[in-house]
Length: 186
Image 1 (cartoon, helix red, strand yellow):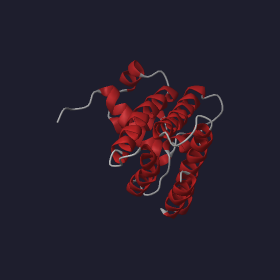
Image 2 (image 1 turned 90 degrees about the vertical axis):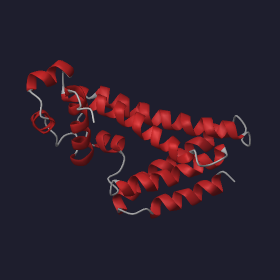
Image 3 (image 1 turned 180 degrees about the vertical axis):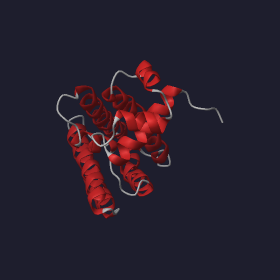
């Protein structure tokens, strides 16, 4: 297996730390120590902790959306892919012991003035919103007027299920949201 370069080790280490212990609770010195890199090497790749967090969120977005698409690809229709996203939420959140959404977690832990990080969190949520819209448009069951309204309602079900499952440390909120989604899209 190929050894990770300095930049990749920093991103991988920071990703684990930001996700599991929080952005504010993770310091540059801890990232440097756990990644096994020199401070000068870190600063060759990243100007700040905020820049590392942006790289983390960009990588997390690609990984998360890829796994979501892989999971829902088992479903034949676009409508069932939307409904199937709740199955992905159960798989993912169970795997991480209901730690929750990396974007929700970092945005609630963010001091003011970290606009680059906030922008990445908004980007991810908007991309998920577009993903839902596109699937609903492909279904041809819903009018152009219905798609945004239904899409936003589905997004609220997804986001609410994620945060409530994190609070409850259980999958019942996701299962309930899935049932609500089935009724909504009937």
